[in-house]
Image 1: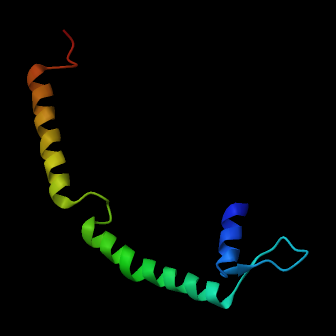
Image 2: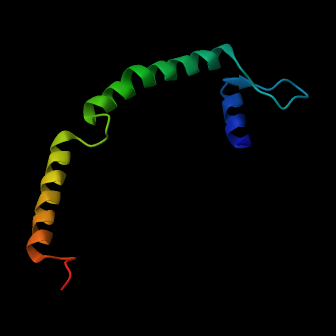
Image 3: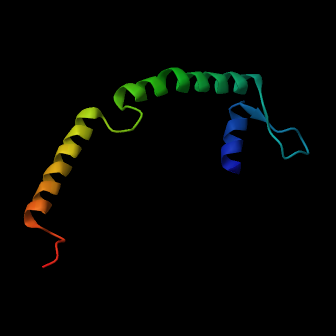
Length: 85
């Protein structure tokens, strides 16, 4: 974690006051944090919702998986797997 903190400090996004182990955001760091928060909310979440619905599986794929499961169930019933012999 120290490496990451040093990188952020070198880029001017955070500062560490002398004789302290705490870090503070600089005005530039605050702007960068706000930018990435807005970018996530307005772009990545919207694009993710378009690509995959909230349940995570696109509808055509979900329908194909359900059809496959029905066929497997029919095969199992036809072969009478699990029935007492």
